[in-house]
Image 1 (cartoon, rainbow, N blue to C red):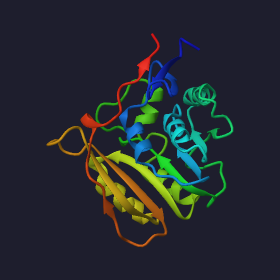
Image 2: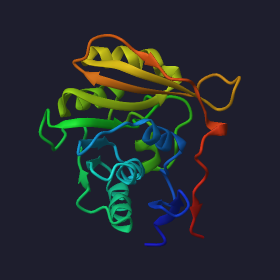
Image 3: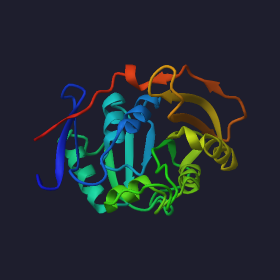
Length: 234
C-alpha cells in the first residue's frame, strides 16, 4: 500500500484520507465545497467524481445521519476511496461505486442532494498534467460540465439540491448551464485567495425545479479559512 498511497490526516486527527502519492491529489476546493454543503436529517446524497473520497468523508463526519453514494470512474482513485472509507469506519454509510457519471449506475430521482467538484479545464487547454490520473481528474477528458449537470438532474428528486464548485472564470457557463438543465441557482458564494484579490472559485447551491431567486453569501477568503494543509505520512 505504501508505494501507491499516502495517508493524510485532517482536522487534528478526526479524519484520515488516502490518496495516490503521484498524480491526482485533492486540493482546497474539495474542502471548500464540503464546508458549503448543507444537509438535513437522513438524506441520501451522491458524490459525483468522488476521487479519493475526501468530500464524502467530510460530509459523513459532519452529518452522521446521511448516506452517501460515492461515484468514481478511475480504478486507482476507487482503491484510495475504499481505503478512506475503511480507515474512518464509514462502511455502510459511504458506499463506493465505480462508474461513469454519463451513465450513473443509480436510480433516477432518488436523491435529496448531489455534490460535484468537476474538472475545471476543457481538453487540450493550457498546460495539462502529465500523469494520467491527474489529467483525467483535472480536465474534461472523460466528462464535461454539461455531463455533471445532466447527471445531477437525473439523480435528484424535484426539490433536491445540487452543490457545485467551479472556477470563477467559467461562472457564466456554470450558471447558464444550471438553468438549462432545470437546476435553479439559489445560493452563491465567491471564493478569493485574500481580500483585494479577484475571485478564484464559485460555490453554487441549485435546486431542481425551483423558481428563480438567488441569495449571494458573503465572500470567502482562503487565507483566513479554517483549512490547513494535511499532515502526510513520510
